[in-house]
Image 1 (tube, one colour):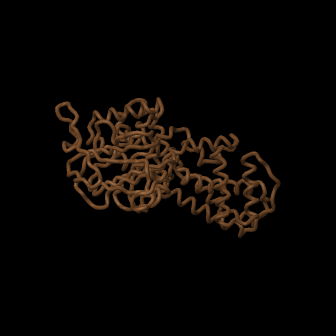
Image 2 (spheres, one colour):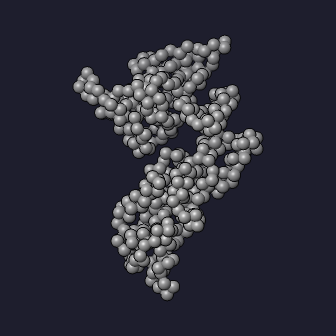
Length: 412
């Protein structure tokens, strides 16, 4: 029900943002009532010009959905998905109201609605397989719509039957799926997904690129680590995610090639204390870097002891391998990013971790240091509450010490 209420709030917000005339709002509310089996009195018909802001909104939403904005979505991207779905819903309400209120001989009204009908048809043809990671949200929304009207909400029904991790699993097993060597369970679950999304060229290109990156890191890590990784994914899916099981995406970690500095952004929204300079400073997280001068290798069957580096210590050299070790004074939401430039970042891990010490990557895995370059970082954020993507981006862009935020650099 929460998702349904948030959707309705988004619909109302869009009507205000695009300054819908009151006559159009009543028209849409009538169409909404018809589709949700909550009828209301028939309103008077809006004037032709009243539909212009609706058309503008639908064009914007259609174009936004068809852009790169919807590639690489995850289950936490409600702030991106809900406004788009709300816009599509409003177009749906208009079409439903017009079908019931417009007289066959009312040619003026037909002309006024012509653009809305055309845009609604365009929207129905959009590739909604991109929303698979948000299928839990879509299922909840569908639960509030009468079954007989589900077919009118294509953006909620298309590909909603697939597991939310299907696209990520396709990335991880891309070559095996195309070579027809994927394990039986993967093939059975993922081939129907590929069939359903294959007409979305942009999404397929995105998945292929991600799969190539994934494969290169998997090769560097070795086949044994790969098998352990895939087994952990399957086990986590069956048993539910444990604390560090969320780190299954570490294989997408780049080789840290071109990294200049390791940046730790900590304490966002944590409690604060006053430092020696009298300025508020965050508490709750400490971090250090474990440097393995033997790189990824474990020599003689014994674990190589790392050199512990703290801020200001000698940086690691090319060919070394590193892990991050951080300690949380309380449970927190952790967001780990690889940043190649000011406008290019990739989320490597996000999840809620318990109080205590954690290492990334876990166990015997390493991140190898490549040739230093410019403006490349690994960024770690810790927060006592979940952060949406906008909050995360703002925190990474505003790299200045402030209440609730401090930046610690470890040079590479």
